[in-house]
Length: 446
Image (tube, rainbow, N blue to C red; front, side, top):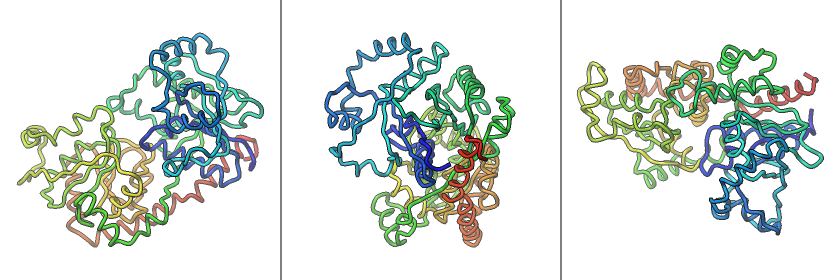
């Protein structure tokens, strides 16, 4: 079904620092363009009503520095709620060439048209939260044929088929790991289940959860999986240059540390990883790359000065002989730097409590780095036999997996080789075919 006009939301892409869903959205736009569709992006930035096209373009790329006064927010939200039934007109963002976009290239999607509705997603979420009302977006003709919302949002495009990606149902499976108000989350999921023209997900595990927990018929759900894609320039960078970067920027030795990367929040299970590492007695440091998200205090409690007391009081691991604090934590790393960190690690540890897919593990596999991941959620489905699977609730198993890779180079090499093969199964080409089949199905051609 080439040549259709597809709308993709820029909800997560507008964030300054990347998220897993932002990566999904960006990869989606690249794949859609590659299979011949026209792609329009819809953002919801708070922009002032400026007259000249060049000024509007400038404020789009610098929304934080040009947002309207905050005192207008309350008035705008009330007006938005009072006129919800009208829908919101998506206005095109001019592309005059004034702004040099090189700085944004790494996180920009591929698109043909760029649109914005002032404060759309914040206002739509608020309207649904307090009044249970969805928001409709409309376009001057011609509008999109299909609106693909890359995460659950209480928004619809008028006169288009609306499909929603549900990555996972973690707030329902592990409600203690999120800040979602469970009642509101379930209400939004039920609205999407009832009104979506189709639901997309990214693993058979998530598809099974959507069927079982939301009662959605299987034929209304398509699992496209995800693609793992890293630019060849980052993968082929000479090892000596990677080693120099690691030493110069982080003081790390190449293949001399274990790595965790991702948001620091309960689902990622960093607390138990730290427990297992501290109990391992390994000399190589554990490097943590990630910003604190929500409920992170408990995940980081063993980094406090009294972590030894906490460990002896809370965890019984049997043969603890020494507890050291050789744990190094850094904040957000740009993607090229992150790839060098992954390539230089002994192993990447990603023992999440539950994932709908688990892209970090596949990214590590593609880089040729051994992976320790979880036996729960979709992780076994995605990793296959190319990773060491551990019970994420058992720090002893995490400890033993770290030791197994550190003490057995042959095993590490075997996992690295299997990992590359496994990552190849989630290629961009396969993802394009899955998406093409999905859109053909929506047009009744599948």
